[in-house]
Image (cartoon, rainbow, N blue to C red):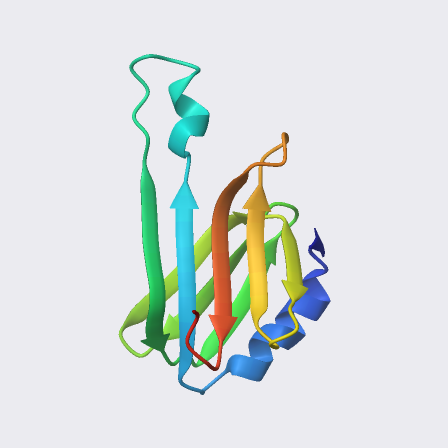
Amino acid sequence: MQPIDDKKVQDALNNYKNKTIYIHLETTNGAYAAHRNDAAMAVSAFIRNGKIVFSQGKITGDNPYRVGLKMDDGWVYAQGLTDWEIDTEERLLLAGHDTEGRIAVALHLSEKPFT
C-alpha cells in the first residue's frame, strides 16, 4: 500500500459509481488498546460482501482521510484512512494505519465478492 493520493482515489471511487458492488468495511482497536489500560474496551465493526450501489463517492480530509458513499437511503463512510492500492483483482483497498503501522480501519470495494 502507499500513502493516499486523494485525486487518484477519487478517480477510483468514480469507477464504482452507480454499479452494484461488494464492500468490506472493518474497524478495530482490538488488542491494541487492551495493554494500555486494564479497563480499556476493545471495539470493532465488520461487514464483508455487503452489496451496495452508491450515487456519489467522495474522499475528504488531509491525512487521515474520510471516504463517504451516498446510497439511496443513507451513507457508508470510513474515517481515518491513510493508505490505498488497487490490487491485482482490480479492487480498491483503503486502510487506516496508526503511527505504529497497525491497521485501525479498512474499506475495500470490488465488483466481485471477496473470498
